[in-house]
Image 1 (cartoon, helix red, strand yellow):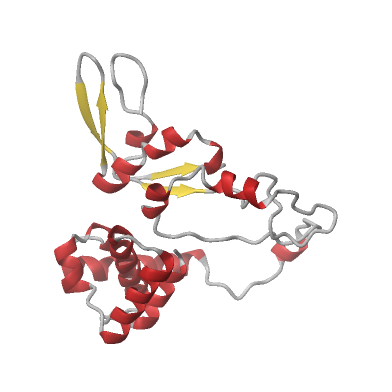
Image 2 (cartoon, rainbow, N blue to C red):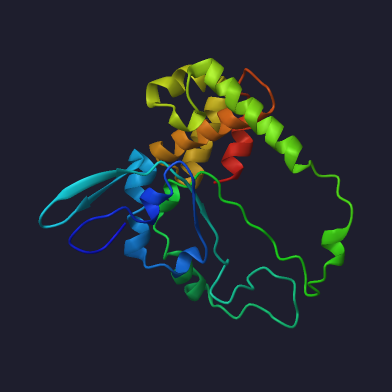
Length: 221
């Protein structure tokens, strides 16, 4: 977005085919954040001014980070810094992100605080996690699998294509229906869950979208 009478590409369009990272997500004005809804859905942004109207491409990956509450200590096991936010304050803080915008964010991940002593020791030790190079190999392989199957990334699957490439068995259909009712998932959110589940299956080199893949995708909602 860009201000002024002469519309120019802003951060959303400049992130085209890249990543738009927004830190302290809840500190942005809600009206500004809701502008993201259009490009996240259509992968373009329309800017209207008195003299002209333009459309810019905006196919980007949104990554956002925010604290769990205003003071940042909700759920932290730190006696010296307990969370002092009331339930109403926590609700107001989180409500800065509208439901329709959250609906368009596929993965919601809570990252717990590691402890009071923020030393380098726990981070410097050996880990059994995959290396970045190995993760990259799996991601590239999953992307190539999707391209070979349907000619596009899973994120680009339309409604009709979802029925073909993200078909569920009876168990999966029941799980999705139950989750949709319990979590209040819109049709849009259910479609996004299916795309994520298809990606999880591809990362496991699975041609079949199984109930376990769907369950993991629902866990990110």
